[in-house]
Length: 207
Ligand code: AMP
Image (cartoon, rainbow, N blue to C red):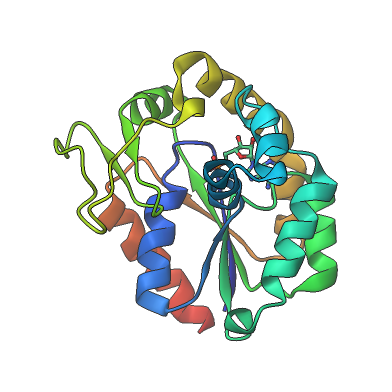
């Protein structure tokens, strides 16, 4: 089962990814998490990626594609994988098409006005978990006990830039996967559980 999660920043990709990977036991491949982990370790790749991320811009395609290509070649991806945050451009989708067969693209559709509220209240953990201040008041992660933090790119001015970038790049991706007949759009203006019920129904059909 090779699945892609598509959606604006704040659409709930990370939350659905955590549920999907736990339920279907497939690896969660998040290019954003890969960059954040490199930033935390102070690698050259991390420093390079951070210069784009902090401005809300996309990291150049060639760099992202290489990371995903090498990750997908690992043994744990043979039974399937979940891509979260990749592809983000048509060039990435075309490159991915050459290295893997995708079964489903789940497009999480949200009203842009609620995204700002979701992201400004988001608290993240280095383990990939994230919470919202309206429903979670602790400053430690309930999964790993790590300290929660506010992502550098979750500041209002950067969020707006990320949303603009998303809007200006997503349509060719949607057309690309629609043409292949594997795009499913879900209403993500609902609770994590409600959206996940739909996700399961869709993925059980292709399993
Ligand atoms: P995310 O955690 O998916 O919201 O990604 C955070 C940031 O990492 C993005 O705003 C980009 O700067 C960078 N990034 C993550 N995935 C990609 C990608 N597929 N292509 C380009 N940049 C990416």
